[in-house]
Amino acid sequence: MFKFFKELVDSVKEGMAEGRDELAQETADREAAQQENNAALAARLAASSRFENFAVALAAVYRQTFAPDLKEAHEAQRSAVHLLCIGIPPNEVEAWKKLLARDFSVTNGEEAEAAVAGIVEDLASQASNDALALWIGRAAHLATGAAAVGHATAEESLDWLEPAAELAIDRFTGWDSYAQSFLAGERNAPGSNIVGRKLLASVAEKLLADELSPWKTVAWPTRDSFADLVASRGAARPA
Image (cartoon, rainbow, N blue to C red; front, side, top):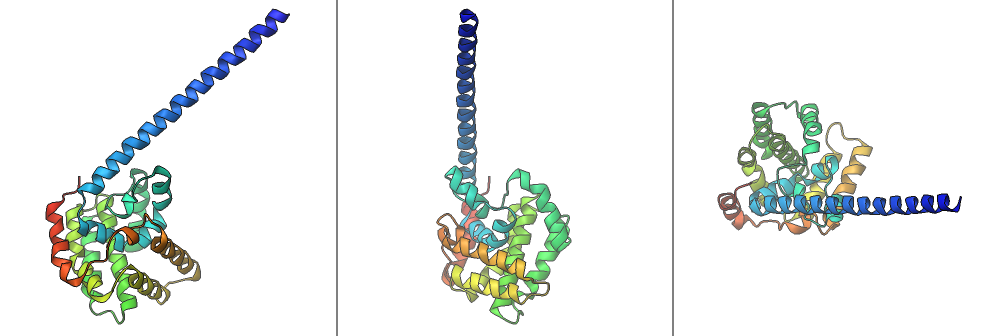
């Protein structure tokens, strides 16, 4: 009987040891995969241009709302790459396609280009800076989102956004003023509701405060630096 119990205890101990080894291996594999992913994202960010970073940051309220990256960036101890570069996580692509179809009736590159062009064409005639900021954010969201899901190339989407980026730099002094006008524009937009407004306001507040946010890491360009900002696209090509 005692021998039986000893063998049982030994068996349990052996099983526990094997379980610890398996858990340690799983943890090591997870950490290695995270490091590999972080390295790939860091390389993507290094290959991006300052213009791409700025263009995507203009859409950051929507990106952080629909495919939030700040929390994961903190947990993985990396930059918030998906708020700085056009690409989004692979598991978000199908949902993002549906989002673009729902909100903009865009399902391909031609529709995306036409929709962005229509928004951009109307920007200069917007009645206020509030409306302007809102539509700049929407244009950036649509253009960069269309490229992220494969409807267009990154370079095409950035071409579409050059006039919008230039207007943003002309009319706003920084991320604070852009965010304030964006939220005011959203408040007065057709179809706006209190739930959506509170959510966007919360996201904007987080973007203005979080140390990893593009609104903290991407400097607002000066008007005189716009040509250099655009030229940065030639010095960095997305991977």
